[in-house]
Amino acid sequence: MVDERIIGETPAVRVATGSENHHDGRELLHEANESETSVTTAEVGSVGHIDLEPLVVATVEGKTAFFSRPSTERMETITRTLGEGTVPTDGAVAVVEHDPETARLPTPETGPLGTGVRRVLGGCGWLAPTSIEEYTDVRGERFTDRAEDDPESVRTHVMTSDLRGRGRGDASGDASVAAEWTTVYETADDPVVVVNGNEPDEHADSDRLLLESAPLLVVDVALASAVALGATDVVIYTNETEQIARERTRKAAAALDDVTDTEIPIRIITGPDEYKAGEPTMALEAIEGNHRIEARRRPPGPNEHGVDGRPTLVHTPRTFAQLGQILNGTGPVGASADPGTRLVTVVNDDTTAATVELSTDATLEAALSAVEPDSGWSGACVGGVFGGLTRSLDVPASASGLRSARLGTNGVVELLDKSTCMVALAGERATFAKEMNCGRCVPCREGSKQLVDLLHRVYDGEYKDGRLRELVRIMRTTSLCGFGRDAARPVTTAIEEFETEFTAHAKGHCPTGICNRS
Ligand code: SF4
Image (cartoon, rainbow, N blue to C red; front, side, top):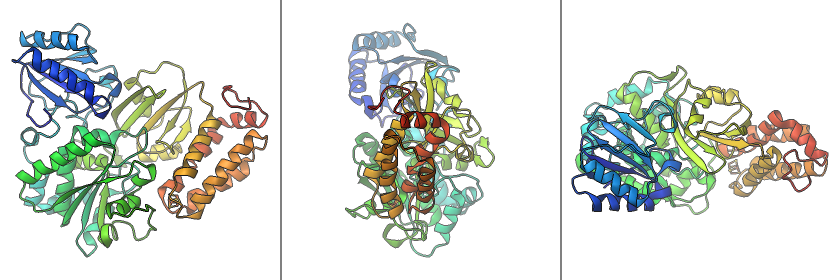
């Protein structure tokens, strides 16, 4: 089960699943429990490779074999072989030798499971997600206990770090976490700490993965942050449809509440499964229970005037996980101006997806082996629904590297094959912006309508790139929140990288042949 210790047990079988394949995982676990009582079984969180899951992780002593989506009959054989003290290897997607007491998922050096590094993802798919006993054993000292003992040391570690925020739902954006902490700490009033775990971008899976597979880590760092900042509340904001993430987060919060001395309450609040609801100030609206969700004008930002007007630290689960690395003092990794790692979900043709962890000084190309694409991809959308289109992934995973390449930083690489029409894709993303914006400010509300209109006119033979570029500039520089500032990125980058497709469409020809006017 998700809250029973499993580390060091042998022989053991873990079934790694996320919400995508939870039911199938439960069936395999049931089969394992029925077939062999001498084997310890556990449900663990996703390893990040949804297409391989349910992933059966079979271990005897320091040897582990991975099986992707085995049948129930195969599951029975795997478990019986483990019961005889042998690791089965026939049909395994990988076999790894490792330290029997390792607290990190043992992975092969190559192949999908060997892609990237596993720092914040180290325990995902290996540790029982909500076992406080196991978590405490692995950590030695919980972050919250450390903050209770020495809050100044926690503040100093964070406020002298160069860490930047991770994810569009983080109030720091891609900027300094230390600056955010300093403002919250220095603003008079009772601060609040918010874990913004509602990321409804269809392909951005990192926050959900952390809440499903490592909720104790996220909640512990958030609670430690609250202690260090003198906050009186922690609010965890989750998506209403992500039940497993929410349930495991709730269990993790309850378990920490039982074992730590802090009196700070942790509330779990759900927000709508709408893209805009992940924007940090709209998250605050949802947390306050407002039915009409609109972005708030800044300044003042949430760090001065957040939940109920109180200074509020808003970080994503991704950022809290990175803060855990800072507090651990684990060796430096990544680009000096943007240290740490970035979680990236790679999506291949909408059929295969994997979330991997890249050092910020690695290039996005390093993520490709996670989905093993054939050579057919001809471009990518980087950064989520409002990401940038590009032909090359030879781009550093740091915020500055991605921004210099005009790509988004929200941790998504969507591979596009040769049949993708970039004009149609840009039109779809502009239509999404037009239909999903909150309506509060004119540049985004009216600009997205005009954007769609100008793109429609391309099909009528009118490609006015000057007007498109000027409209995009206005949206980017005058929109009230990140939604509007980023909404036109797919269009601008499509024009820059694939302009011949726009001119071809204006002449009535779609190079891919999929548009109506081709
Ligand atoms: S930029 Fe768009 S989503 Fe943000 S406040 Fe303006 S209308 Fe709303």
